[in-house]
Image 1 (tube, helix red, strand yellow):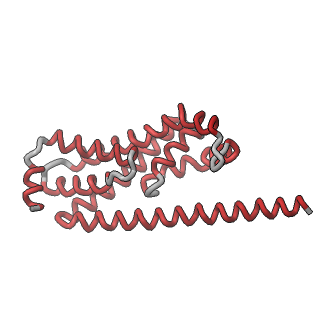
Image 2: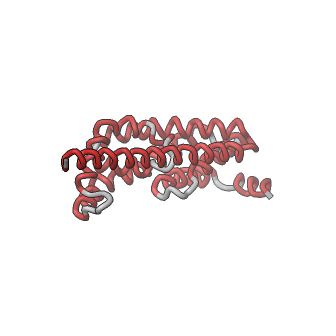
Length: 207
């Protein structure tokens, strides 16, 4: 069954295969549930079979990843920021947004450089980079470097794994789960500490 699938893929025009990689890499950033990394790893397997080339696959997936990242950056910078400030949501009011913007302006570039390795937060990072109005050229370059390194790791691993590319996929999925859990725990702990500090300040002020 799998061999038949590979043969059918192998009969596809090379341009279509590259197009699928580009679309998957882009959509994975825009619609996070789409398993873009899995498609990239499978693409690496096709590289090993000689169906497509390593360097074009790496560059195409990197361009797709950066384009997806910058899509949310543009939304955050030119629309999302004003929308959230106008709505002034209780869970994310203007005050909290200003604090997040200040934090992103201080540490945002480093976070963008690491964004591809922070599973589950890529879209959030890009939109907050837009909120904070970080320079688009710096954001693009750092997003490109991050995507190039990450996709390079995936394609190299998938290439050498060969028919065992599914094993690499499972490793990436497990890594993503662990990172996501750690990020959630960090946020929860941060919120708890923030509330405790506020309560302490209010208690001190009241007394």
